[in-house]
Image (cartoon, rainbow over all chains, first blue to last red; front, side):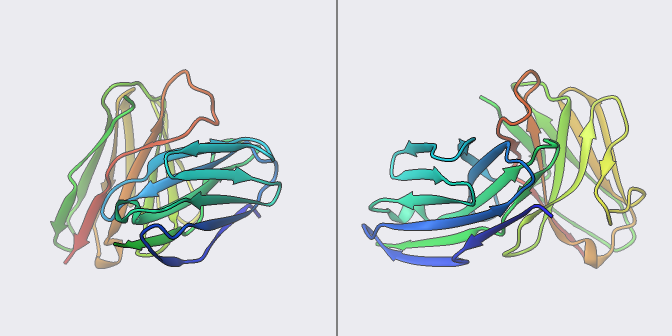
Length: 110
Length: 118
């Protein structure tokens, strides 16, 4: 069964303290791995799509990487405004259902 | 671009009544929209896939008679929670993929509807 597991569940950082969020996945033929940011009471906001192992994408302080079993979201020198829940999701070979992980709640303190 | 508007953002209703939630793609067309339910600190759970002009496809365990979905146009899908009960209280989120984009392109989400059934 296709599955997405994110760790840690919650992460507390000081401003400027870099770290990484993990997304482990099991899927029958990966057609895309997505990272979204979700603020409280809001819908998810798209960040990145990765399609194949070895691929990397960057946006401001965020960098997403992908292997055959997991993806990392690296946060460099985070700021308080980076505080949010980060969701990882995968699309399998069938292509009709996007499966989400439970997310990592990130808190960045000034 | 790619804005999805969901309305209402919050609704409180009494047990036994029905509630309709609208999901509109404002600047693009979508043949397919997806309805999710999210519990606190949990993953988004896909409830159903809404297809323009045809019946929705429901996930296992989701009651189609309770959660009525209508996708009447390329820019509007509605979810009606019928005879709501307190256990239906949750955060409902819709999403859409723009017409003409690849099936593995990212989803665009609405801002969700917080439903509270008293």
